[in-house]
Amino acid sequence: MKIFLKIIITTTLLTAALSQAEETMPEYDHFQGKEVANLKEAVMLFSQLNAKIAVILNKGEPTYEDMHKIHEMTYTLENALAKINTEMAALAPQLEKLHKASEHGKIKESLYEGQKYLGIATHIIP
Image 1: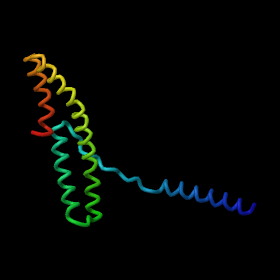
Image 2 (image 1 turned 135 degrees about the vertical axis):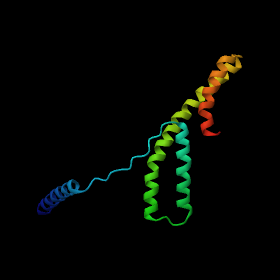
Image 3 (image 1 turned 45 degrees about the vertical axis):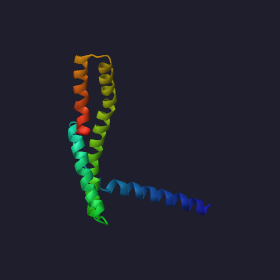
Image 4 (image 1 turned 90 degrees about the vertical axis):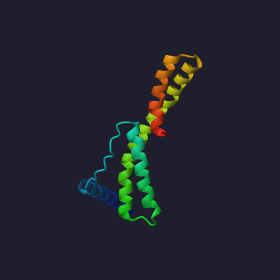
């Protein structure tokens, strides 16, 4: 019974101590990734930041400062990748519209749908 009581008291004290510690611990602000306005900007940022990360990783043993830089860049990369994924999801249906219009010889519709398709596709591979 004494051991059980000691365990309960110890657990209660540890819980109270952890709760107190959590209240006094500083909250860390996370980085805000750069907002990405459009596909062109997303691809540019994705390319630039991946190149910067490659330089850091290829130089050898990264430092903690290097890890901090990479961590900060990942926030913007996540935003860029989300924009790329959203735009790429729209690309296949747009290509299908061009495909159908051209298949049926609809010149005006093909021009319209083709321009919309290229407006997305050329930002990925010029």
